[in-house]
Image (cartoon, rainbow, N blue to C red; front, side, top):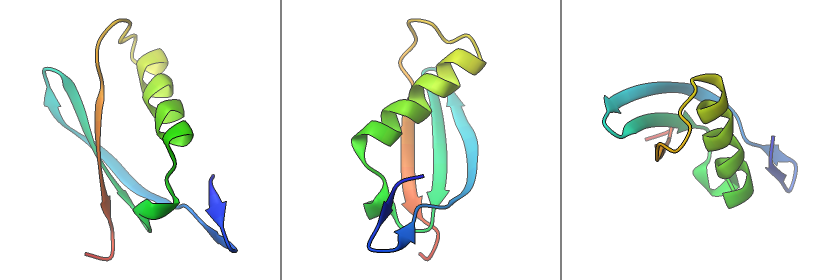
Length: 66
């Protein structure tokens, strides 16, 4: 998991909110810790796990402290 100054990113939960295109809503402890590389890794992991080849995947991110 990405970290900065001793704080590490924690995924609270992920849920799918739409199917066309597949859209996932993700709660994290601090969205500023999430970098583009890790977001791309999540997108590719979801695509591999659920066989979404060639399908755009959207990920919406929110801090869990809101």
